[in-house]
Amino acid sequence: MLYVKRTFDFEFPVEESDVALLGIPWDFSETGKPTRFAPVFIREAIKNLFGYDPKTKKNIFKIYKFCDLGDVEVVPGNWSLTYSRIKDTIKQIFQSNPNIFPVFLGGDHLITLGILRSLKLFYEKITVIDFDAHRDLYPNFLGGKFSHLTWAYHVAKDKSFELVQIGTRAWSGEEERILKKCRIKSTLRGIKNPIYLTFDLDVLDISDVGTPEPSGMKFEELVKIIGRIPKDRIIGMDIVEGAPDNFYSRSSVAAANIIKYVLLHRA
Ligand SMILES: [Mn+2]
Image (cartoon, rainbow, N blue to C red; front, side, top):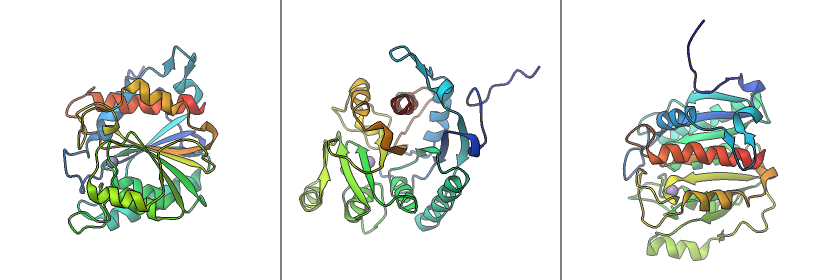
């Protein structure tokens, strides 16, 4: 008898899986606390997650077959090389299984831009629902085009995407001028495209995140909003900006539970 425990109760090959976990521990554009270790802590929180939901009587670990693909090998400080690795990896995953639901674990919010530009290969237009305290709408930050503070600007400018921002509560005057020029929605109504979800954990009222802000959402408020997203259109998700400093800290437990409630909603 082998008394061992893996991340999940079961691990399927990517070709047979419904859900794939992929860590992207890139945090070299982070301006606050380091977020590169979050995938480790989130996996540990998933290990201890109740897959069962008493309300719906559903268990995500019974409904879905999971695989954990590990982490993209990011190149410290080099976004363009890291982006090409993210793109190649995502391409390979979808070639192996076009129906897979990818769950990406960051890292800082710049990874979302890399993921979305990779997903453009497979979708004509994508609605991006961004749960975030911040707008991340700087055209550049300290002269750099690619940062966790600029990713949403690039998305808003790209006609392949429609951007919806939920939970935003802190931004600059410069971002407000951009906001007036770009068509950024703040409602879930009228979405017709495939939907990608990005969760910046600072949308919640927690502090172990890259850039904490007061007055965030309660977890149950977030779950309610998730419940209103057109579920048949959700094609993938990421969770970014967690900066857990210990096992079972709030951000990693919240991240595991966000994954649970998105998957329950899709079921
Ligand atoms: Mn963000």
